[in-house]
Length: 370
Ligand SMILES: *[C@@H]1O[C@H](CO)[C@@H](O)[C@H](O)[C@H]1NC(C)=O
Ligand SMILES: *[C@@H]1O[C@H](CO)[C@@H](O)[C@H](O)[C@H]1NC(C)=O
Image (cartoon, rainbow, N blue to C red; front, side):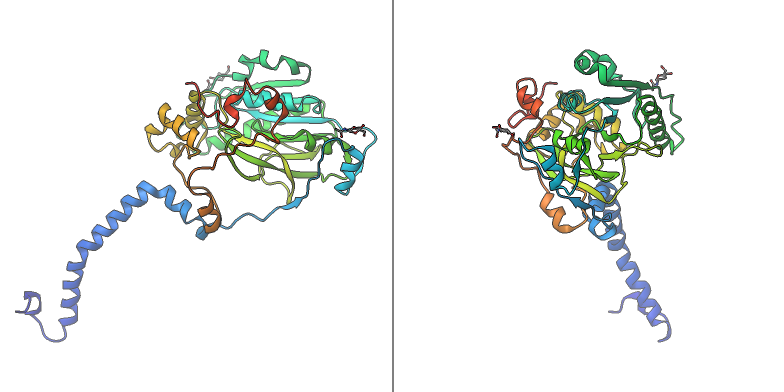
């Protein structure tokens, strides 16, 4: 029996009729398929975009890596020479500029480690995050922990007014106001042309060897990035070698604070970048809420202390995200938890000498207090 649709019409109308029949019959599955896709994309939008990143994104121009030489008990004359530079007769002054969020333990390790080599620690702390969430002034509330470095610290607070939630560009404005305030603070610090300026987040720590090269060697590039070992949660979880945002500058009047790509040169193996290296679970939750793109905390359960503790001990991702990589090879290599390391060699020496106070940053120390 012919389906009723075919009954009418001459041969002229037939293709149209078949088309209509097919379209009706296909409509439902297609509609179903589309809605499944829409739901999947809405639900897993971030994972899908990250998974397909190698297709839609091109990697930034690769850095030219400057090989880094070091051995203990080697003179600065020899070390500078190995880099193709010459030792100065007296060292340059070093200024270390950071925007401080809430990484108190890491900041203390940074300052203890670099104290002998840095002339001025310039530090700015705001009472709200880039996204306008109020935050305590934790540095000024814990000044006693930094009294050992008081003579070298230049600190200021940045008051952030209430944000207008309708104003979409506001986080960028707040970020710009941080940069302006830090530049103003730098001008008050006494820095002068020819001094070394390190610009980094508090958790991006250059090694003493790196700072020594910067102080002593004539010929270091005017601007170079510092390639740091990337760690997550503690030094037990090494991610890769590719942290690059920290920079070292030979200061001149035009030098301004930035935390982005500024040069094609990068000094290899120049220190440590320990992300989310907090002592207490509540610090993780605060940082997740306050500092990340709001859309990363996709479920309230992400902030559950038991889940955060589990993630920290297994080396998983706090936001359940895929790694950001530019090739499928790197993406697959990095998928899954970060393999844990049992090495505590080549870490900041203050950390090792005070291992009892900083167990949570060392292999086997993943259990945190609330
Ligand atoms: C370091 O060098 C000095 C002389 O340059 C030497 O006397 C000393 O034994 C060396 N120390 C080590 C541990 O090699
Ligand atoms: C930051 O401090 C300033 C001045 O003390 C105050 O007016 C402002 O409301 C504070 N901002 C937040 C987000 O608490």
